[in-house]
Image 1 (cartoon, rainbow, N blue to C red):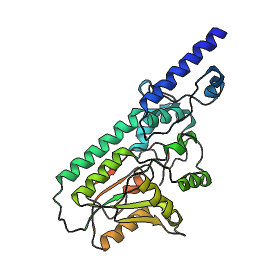
Image 2 (cartoon, rainbow, N blue to C red; image 1 turned 45 degrees about the vertical axis):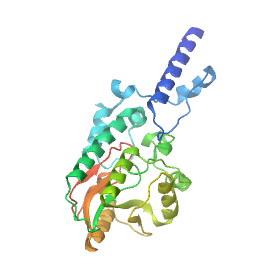
Image 3 (cartoon, rainbow, N blue to C red; image 1 turned 180 degrees about the horizontal axis):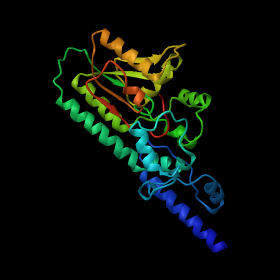
Image 4 (cartoon, rainbow, N blue to C red; image 1 turned 90 degrees about the vertical axis):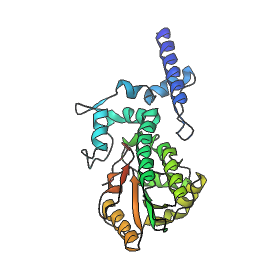
Length: 276
């Protein structure tokens, strides 16, 4: 029994080392076992590490979790409330390993190629719309403590996290943001965050080295419509004011669906939650 326990401890410590090696500076630090005394706690909370996405992990209703995530990203799986419990570990592996960063890089590389192809008027009217949560700022430090979306959303605890103003910037999106500013396209933030969160959102963005945006549009008190209705309405206001929306990027389909149509839209991966 002692030998088996020693072997388990060794495997957990090796896996923890692999996670640390795989994570970059922006990613969340999760406490991993450093001694035999920590093993029981680690067993209760399944270990998340970088190798499992390649090996596969869990199924939901007979469907492999990687296929479920693909359905989410393709907008075929809709109106779900939580990540399937059996896929919590898979989503955690994906978000904390290198796979999420690789997928995000592909999206941003395509966006940058599109920017390079544009023939800009240079009249100060060309704008690019950015979502904030899981697009510009990552809430992974919060979701890593709340089952990577496998537990029901708790607005109270999430808003408390937002008030900390500590969300790290997604480095790939920041690369696009800086490129747009360098060529004269004005960034506009259009977020589902509410007006009372304006000050801390501005602080958080600036702490992450993000500045120089044209506008920060937040949801006003009392708005009752869907995310698509809200965001398409705000884009319409921009267009009515004479601005040309040359691009739009978000992590949810509701960030990019709805009129007015943009020249191009880009969706970043997010298997942790769904906003319709």
